[in-house]
Length: 347
Ligand SMILES: Nc1ncnc2c1ncn2[C@@H]1O[C@H](COP(=O)(O)OP(=O)(O)OP(=O)(O)O)[C@@H](O)[C@H]1O
Ligand SMILES: [Mg+2]
Image 1 (spheres, rainbow, N blue to C red):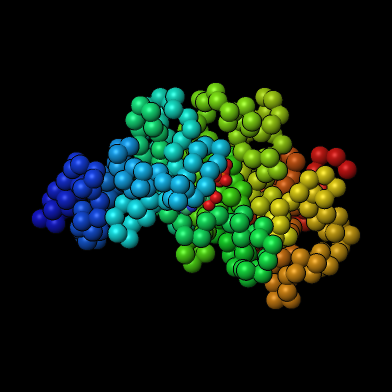
Image 2: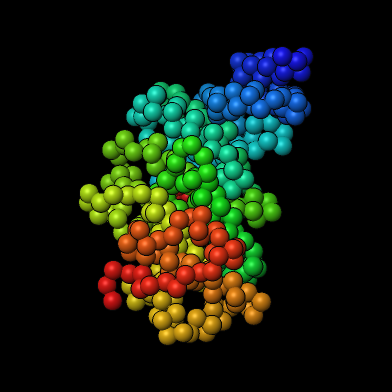
């Protein structure tokens, strides 16, 4: 082992073992310097260690005692707080509502989530597992979630071409979760609120692995919704005893594509946007619909591709939906888009 390797081990374990309050940045800085020199087997070993543990006291420090001003939102799993580990290193701390998780399950799932590594996934830095507090520590995403951009009244704040590339990158992140490494992760809750945007509006998928982590729960979350979110849930996820596969994420992704097309929420009933898109497609009036969505000439070709891919993803029968890998290839025009059959259950 070279001197550099030894130095890295020393540095890493020193960082890992020392009190969390003194943690991080110096050690991290050193770690980054040395990581450039370490061979792949050491990298593999280090990546196996996964996300690091934090104490509740650490989290309180990062988030100024979970101050209201640092609260950036809340979801079904708990509140999210902005935090700062040290200068320049910001995190989002998600305090989980569920306290009754088994330590072994928690650590196993968190380590899976932490080891998933792709530029289109929000990085999980660490976790807190204390008797009264369970929390996850994520990289902080400056521009919040895609839904806020899509549903804004003055929808002109983002170029539609940028939305198209957000759709492509998100599909790549999902492909990685499904097929890209030795463990398959089904997200179960793909939606615009779980696509977060960094300072350059580059998208990253958040909350992957959470559904499995929290599945033992018997509280409000499971009473109001087992998994996923109304409007995005694939039909098989709410039908008793049906087999749910990664194709449920493809369906939810398709619902999100409709929202990107219309820059609006899909709505319900007679106003359900996916039905309107199908009607226009069937009558060969997609061009008109796209113009009505305020999408300009230069984006019409991509918008048509996106609309057809959305209709393929929204198929009622899971086997008829494409894999996410195929979705990427269609969106990137590597393969032609198939003609979507009628997607929904009833005509
Ligand atoms: N890593 C992060 N960086 C910055 N903001 C985040 C981060 N994670 C979550 N948020 C913000 O916190 C808010 C709540 O997120 P949360 O994931 O708890 O709820 P949700 O996505 O709306 O619903 P769900 O519980 O189904 O995921 C979101 O609006 C998001 O903008
Ligand atoms: Mg979320």
